[in-house]
Image (tube, rainbow, N blue to C red; front, side, top):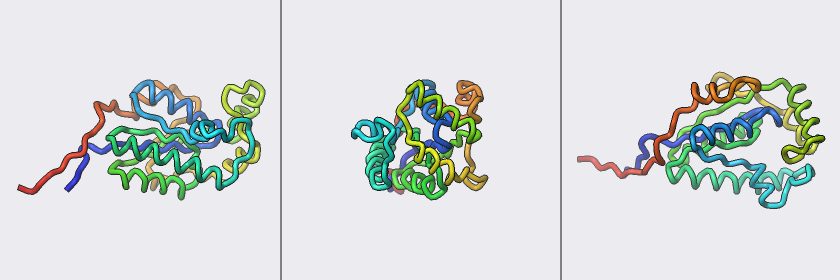
Length: 188
């Protein structure tokens, strides 16, 4: 039988656009050396979403397929991954949990909680400062209107958007020693 001990972890971020998910993902990377897979970055590398244009479901499907392939590759190599996306429905998070399971990993949902009006103010400020890529207002509204916060059955870790990141990471994200190796165990 083929086992991975201990299991790699797929950290699934969820939250409204402009909640601070990407900032938290990068802070986790810096503090713990965990890989980050960001579908927005994948899309930008494909030349999509650079100027805040609306992206169709079909384009998002192509972007997410590539991002999920990258996450799967890292998990297969025994590395932990932060999947930096809105994953705004339970169905989307379930699909990412299945991805982790299929690649011998466990999953942890991290809910970056922020009031909608505060996320909207951050979106509006970004339209002026352009500190990050633009998000079409219809994309922002679609996520906000259909967002399903994770319930207790998903046992999420909750990060409040204004909390001290370093302290939160120290309390919730363990240090990863080295990539885990898959081992073949035999019955004696």
